[in-house]
Length: 333
Image (cartoon, rainbow, N blue to C red):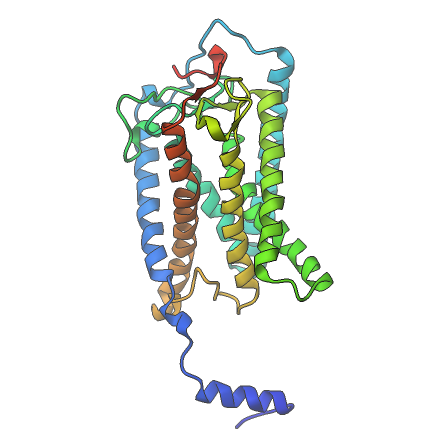
């Protein structure tokens, strides 16, 4: 028995019968899920080895003789508190609340969890050389860089990777900017419906570039929570200063934000569970589809962060010649 409520329903029904299966069934979900599983296993192995290592799982040594001004230390603690509150808000509204109400995760929730897990990759910043300097006053338990693949044994492994403000950055620069950008993109499209996606994403890129540039420079100058120890000089502002800033940092972060925005925007235009990341999961048996979708999003997060951010950042840093004049509390032990 068929029920129609108008001509549009009849046309849709005919199309459903006559059209071939959607090409999305050959989507990337399986491949991305494989990457997600591999990365998850690596994360577990790295963290377990780090926690059980003894010396590596202790706060990084305080290096003298330089001492932070009291106001900078207060600013650092405020930054840590704000970061912790931001992460808690994202976890509550994107993960916990949807799970309690619908027993399922939205793409936003998967991005949040993916960002937290992918924070392990942050240590890739210094896997070859000390390119990204950390303040020994950060709340920390050292760093797990020594146990990551491709670690250079001659690279330092005793510095204070932040456990408080570090993970939130992998949430609000990825999931956060995507949520805000998609919301604002809808307003722009309503105002200028003929605007092309290229122009729309150019606006998104500019917004995300400015957001990163402002946030990072404010944090660096006020808290000394971190610094860019070695950068590519032709693309570095205030070269040689403790607050030197590689302009490619904001460019790469903006590209990462655009990729997450694209994925979220495409997902909003498709049925639930058929985001461009998760296409192909329906080829698996029902009991495994949810797991394939979850790991596919994790794989997407990791691929985006590594190829769009970490690899270019490391390459430009390794060939760089601009060394920041760092106080001792920003040096590796």
